[in-house]
Image (cartoon, rainbow, N blue to C red):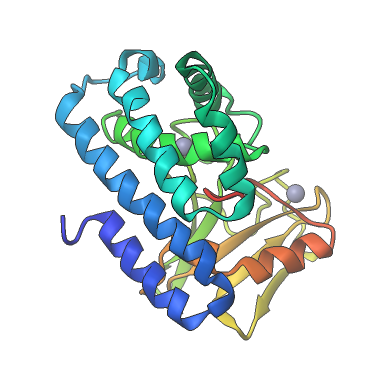
Length: 264
Ligand SMILES: [Zn+2]
Ligand SMILES: [Zn+2]
């Protein structure tokens, strides 16, 4: 698995942590989470049957997930920023019934993005499983024009500009199942607004390949990773490393369309 998606993200996170000391703590935590996620994905891949199509209700049929949750809590407890560590302590003292309630809720609550720290933990824990189930589902992305994830119905966490011809096309990425689908460039993914004058894009010298795409109608924003400017960037990891852009956007009254894995 030397070149698995997780290995690539971990290497990118190590690189960015060295470059941006302010993001070193969050990226260090991400690296631990990503290592755990990779192991969990491999375990699921070995034990779960890839039914076709795999349904979204399979969570209850995957006892190996629940078995792995305490190990995840240990990883988090060891490395997490304070606000997560306290929650882990409380979670550990709950019966495993409460864990499965939390996980099932996180799995099926597609309308409401995670908000409380324990919901982010559940989101991060379930992410590899969502990716696994999505990879076995027959998705028809041709002609799909909606702003919600075509697999799990969540709002996108990040956008990515990929080279196409002389320009770039914009894709949206689901932070949960990591589905990526094309979406028109000059349309707000939050409310569908097409009025360019109300869709300002901000950039900062510190992150030349990152854009903050805002909407002055619904007051949301999504960050976009411009791969035409930096082909080494990774949507998930570069989003985490550019926290100052989130702080800037939020100070200016914009709410993120969907928070990332670690709650930013
Ligand atoms: Zn999704
Ligand atoms: Zn909007």
